[in-house]
Length: 270
Image (spheres, rainbow, N blue to C red):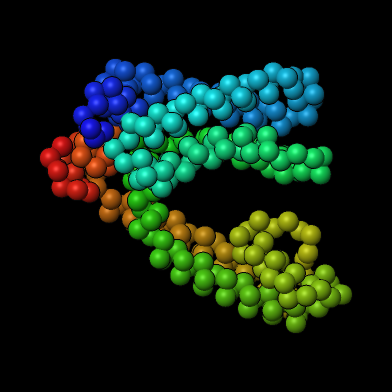
């Protein structure tokens, strides 16, 4: 018997992966509230005086949310048309990352691993990414970012070359006596200046260096607009119709468009 022949499994899949039904909408609402509550608990637990006062409560909440999301993850694996495809998907990885750190903390003993445990606890903030699965416009934004990745990569490489040249020039102009002790330090200053952050921990002292700094600042304003324009152009090219929550019964591909009659992955009729 395949997955489609099991009525309970198919019913579970419709509730979990689709929100066209009242049960599916209720499941999504409850899950979103649980995600938000778990993220708030993690953030509150990072406050020292709250952690000291309510440590047992935070521990119980963490395990409660972890067990809840574990059941959800297992139900998704059980009901998905292709469990392996779901596991490899972006949201499948996020779902796993949202529960894995809590279990890993049980098998890492010893006080010397306190910092590692703190890192694992911080990784639980990945649960906030699960919210992307319930935002209708997320697929369009992610698609625009994916479509512009080559242009953005070229832009990043060009900017990296630019700050390397600028940092090298500033190292020659200012020298170690003015804080530019090495080319890497000078490149760090160039990045901070080009992005108009301006920490002020290093600043040029010579007239030529100050002129160079002004040129880099003005260049930064022009450069910052480039990646925004690239992504905006891809968003403008994106289809006006947003994908809804329907999924293909044959292959399990989700995000099918409302007007589509056939699956955009396997070609089966929806």
